[in-house]
Length: 463
Image (tube, rainbow, N blue to C red; front, side, top):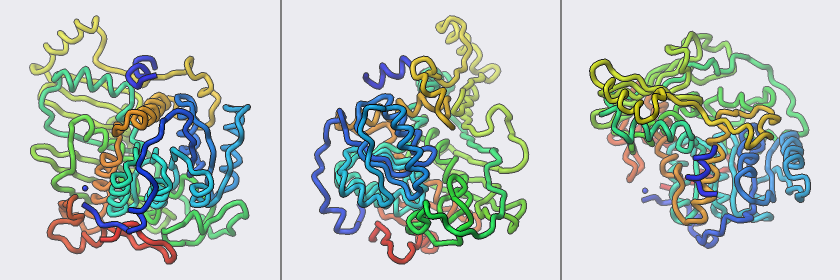
């Protein structure tokens, strides 16, 4: 099934020499690919199950440092593929890559492990489905991108808004048609109360969990309980809500408007409530501006108080000369400006048999009834994830770059990381040189492009 039919129905870098001596750059056929999953938590399981729905692949390996996650994933696979041979399970992803030699690797580990896992998998000969963000720091991302290009790997980043059916239809109706006119301003936001508010005590690490391996290159802080999902509240492992939620919406804006690297990035914010009273150390309030010639893309998040627009608590708004376009993962709506876009909307509505200029997520309950029995599935996102994975499989077969190619994911990821660096430097305006890999005229900011690794781990970027 081609991606188009599926949607109808439902830069110069010096890196470690070892990266240059990896296996052949030849791309294998997507049929019957040997697949491995690194990171068997919530979204790892979700990605693997969506892939099995759209591609004929063989799952040969699962890796997680938590034995309980491995057990849960094996049970799910037995339900979905009762006659298939169970995949081998590993705590060490390097051993999995060496022994199983997968053709395609899905990576859904915590953010601080993304870059090292991605590079190791590409070195082992695999193409990738890499969950966003691409990296924890900017220069990790440069190393991932350089490795993909040097080895000819196909890498799809999990920014699946680029494959979201209702947003593709919206793009066609409102943007590609010229209905909205020139875009003058972009706003992005998240008002979810998603910052962890507890202050757990130090605990003994359980036998089924390898905390050392989970921590990897990040600082080893005292263990306070299983970190699944809660790790996003710590700067040691991620880049806060900007690095989690803004990446999606900023990447969507860039895709819709054809934007590359921003010329300038500026951010302010901090912890406005309960500082020092919680285990979390990410901001609860932050504003970031990504500036392009004649256009600013502005992000804001708050983990307290109400949403500015209750219908769009995590969303993207495009303000055009003829109207305003609102969108999120579940819906979109277009409102014409009085006296500018109303006549055009009326004409377009006539062509669409008086359908409103709005749309909703594609739910495929009848086509994939097993979704209804799946724990924690995001039903409104499932169609987008399936389309995104199918695009990756087709990109491998057709030897082309996927819709969310690693370079696009790197730009969106790095820009959000740079916003956090700006905030950490008191709101300094930053301009990143993506060819020289430095912040123009700012040595202090340039030093922050690369995080320190824990002893025993080597950062993949060698400048």
